[in-house]
Length: 226
Image (cartoon, rainbow, N blue to C red; front, side):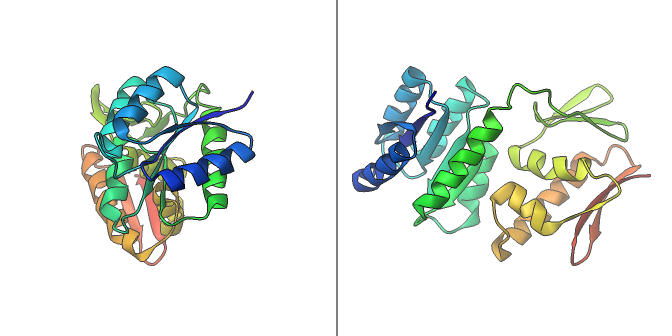
């Protein structure tokens, strides 16, 4: 059965090129040219994955993604963005994007990213790993950290950072691996953002003094439970 891709891209020429490439790779492609049309086609077509530009008329990619996430928390969502700044990328991940590509991009890389997201999405019904971190219980699938009966909702980025270090308590996870887990690449511009989100996680974990995220200078971070 062929996977169905919803492509939401307002530049007609680029949309045509991407659609033809994905069709040649064996995908069924549904094209929309603005966020409002994209949302309507998402509801009607029920695609397996959404590939969407950020800057679009009528309804931008972020607003469209918020509405899609309220309907389907699990459908893979890949953003395309022409902006070079990290702010838009972070905003996209906070909304619930699974990946992003900066324009201009190689079509081959887009196909690789789509394949990876579809493989991950095919296992969405699998039992999510649950992590015990001191007095906390971390459920990455639900994006919830529970402490003494209190549920703390985590952002998409916080989950992407906490899961690899929670899976390796007492071991250092490299900063490079963490940046790739969140932003798909290791770039200087991402390092300050990484430090900022680690600081947020430390604040979330402050209720249990036995839990700490230690900075291994020059390498990465270690989650410890004393």
